[in-house]
Image 1 (cartoon, chains in turn yellow, red):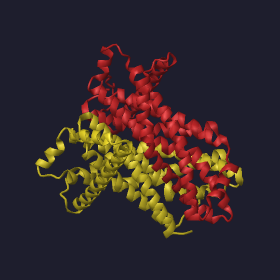
Image 2 (cartoon, one colour):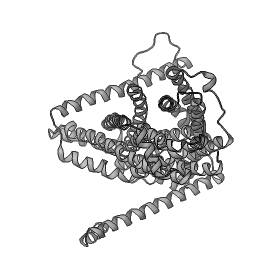
Image 3 (cartoon, chains in turn purple, yellow):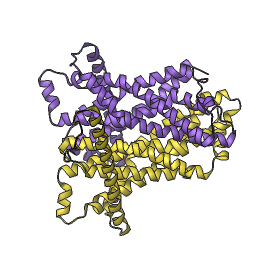
Image 4 (cartoon, one colour):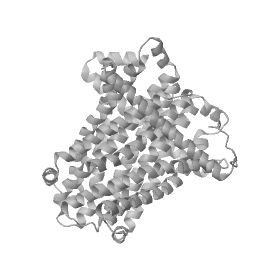
Length: 275
Length: 271
């Protein structure tokens, strides 16, 4: 109530005041969220090395995150593989009718960026939303408070197994899904542009820099998804509407985190590994 | 699922379990597709008779489109930058390819990356939010209350949201295309020393309106898929607060999968 009175008082002072007030409130909440996220990340790392581990918890999460996302990820990445080769084939056709570099260029792009980034965007919808929904409904049904009362830190008990499982499984899933995207791309190149297998399956453009960049992205995204969506889940409040909100925020924030991280990792790799 | 007893099947064997889970997931997918098709028919039957609640429609447009602008802004700028960073080694390898940067980035952004990433973000922000809202209404019996008051929930709640999502995505893709190209132009200047002027020359001489139109048609189709899956999973919510979370989760997965499959189909049909 106090906040509303305050808001009405500010609004009385004119539009500019109200705008500045809103901007400030948003900036403060952004800073607060950043601090919360950082604190959760540090606690996750701390409990990863020091916490008590429930037997089988990590394996169960690995099944939940890895095996159950495999089909979804393969379908979407298979589709994107076909689309990308088709579109870049069309591009090549307009300029030079020479498809000998289509496969190697596509493979380089896949290893360096697309497999990890598109795959992680897909995982953030499936895994991130799942984690936020699960933890969010535990928060509104007071199960997380029950954990705290039993002297079990919810970060140790809920987030750390998901964090470890996601670190491993994101990398595994992205390697599998990337392979599938490369193979469906080959089918498209063969059927539409008549590219031979010898020309397509060539690793001539892959160097250590590409592989290191791709692997860095896998690990960074794999760590970010459970931490960001776990933060959204733990900060749930207010019944079933709150759970819905938390899940929505998890998807948006995970995607945003991935896109921003991608920009910085790609930029850094361009400077570290100049071609 | 346990209604029909198999005659001689060895229950509990691996093959039996695999077949059972395959059948169950096939039935699940068919159920979702059928539900979405029925919902589309119901929505269209209200639309042709112009039965929609105008104030609710305006409220939704504001909430969906205007409130999404900041996130579309950030995502589009970064996307444009990433496209150029990924194209950089290619441009450096081929001498004299600087003039092609605008064309390459424009082709990728306008036809593929712009609509696709905007659709994924709108599906997360607007579609998931809408599912959560409808799901909460379902589990708190507000839809039944509407029916009890003789208000048609489809024309009062669903049609405004359905139209709102499609219009939102269309408008946001236009914004995102423009912003991504601005981001790409200035990243090209920063990383590759390609002046924005060269960038825009490459963009305008080699690309045609058909490239832009291609992306905008995709935006409408993606919007349709997001709107349908968002409304369907919202209305099909069961089981309290955890049910709402599950519904939102199922919605984002279904929307992402259908966006990619439809993208593939549309790309091939339009060439």
